[in-house]
Length: 193
Length: 173
Image (cartoon, rainbow over all chains, first blue to last red; front, side):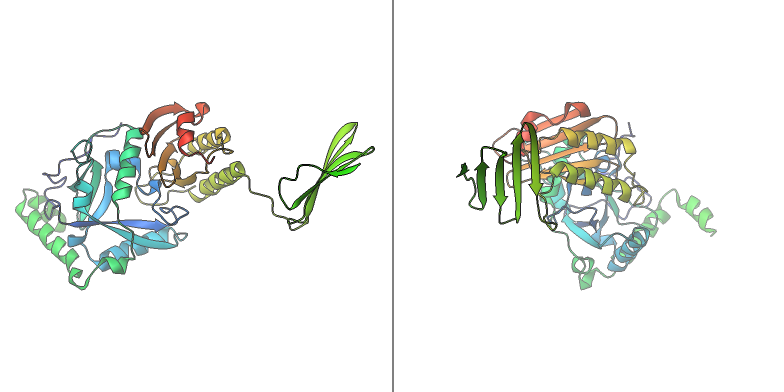
C-alpha cells in the first residue's frame, strides 16, 4: 500500500519551495493528450484521470497564476517528442472552487487541491481524494470529478495577455521562500554561494 | 413446390423448393447476396455474398482487436511517472471480454490509464460504468444509472464476469 499522501490544504507539501497555498479563486490546468485521454466521442475518458493519482500520488496540475504559456508549451513539446503518436495536446483549465465544491449528499468536498511546489516548478499542485477510499468508490468519485471539468481547450486559448509573467511570479516567490527558510544554507551550499 | 415463407424484411425473398433437393433460399437483394439452406439427408448451408460485401462487425472481435492494439501501443512506459499495463492486465481484460453478453449490452470504450489500468467505460445518456483491471485476476467497478442506486464493487474475480445488475445498466435492448 503506498504511503498516505498529503491531503491538508492548509499546509504545503513542500513549504520551503511554496509560492503559497492554493486559493479557491485560482485556476489549475491539466494537460490532455489526444487520443490517449479522449473517448471515441471526443469527450474525456475515465482513464484520463488515474485512480492511483487521485487515491495516492496526486493528480498533477499547474496553478495558472504561477506558470506561463511558454512554460507549459515547453513541457508539451517534450511530451510530444517522447511520444510522437500523440495527435494533439490540450489543456483543461479548472477553477479550484469547482473541484473543492462540497458533495451535495455528504456536504463535504470529495477532493482537495494541495500545494506541491517543486524546485523550478512553483506552480505544481495536486488533486486528491479528500480521504482514503477503495478502488470501486474512487471510480465513482472520478466520475463525479469528470462531470465537473470544463471542455479542454487549445493551450493558446487558456492564457490571456495578462498571464505572461506567471512563471516569473512563481519563481520570485519560490526564491523568496527558499531564502527565508531554514533550508537556505543547504541551497546555498548546492549553488556554491 | 415454390412458395414465399414469412418475409421479415422487404428486401428478403424466401423461397422453399420441393420435392428434391429441398432447400430454403434467402435472397438479400439489397446486399447483393443470398443464403441457401439445403436439406439432402445431411444438412448443408451455402452462403453466397459478393466479393465486396462487408459483414456486420463482431463486437467481441472488435474489443479483442482494441486490446491487442493497446497492448502494442503501451508496450513501453509512455509518460514520466506512468506505469505501463502488465501483460496480466490485458489477459484479464481479454478473459472478461469473452464473458460479456454483448448481444444485449452496448460495447464499452477501452483505454489505458497512466497507472497501468486497462479501463472499460460504458457511457450513455442516463448511465455510466467505469470498470478496470490491474492484472491481479480481479476487477473493480462503479456503475450509475438514473433512477437506480449506484453499484460499487472491489475485488471481483475475472472469471465471474460482469454482474447481471451492472450489465442491465448498459442494456442495448
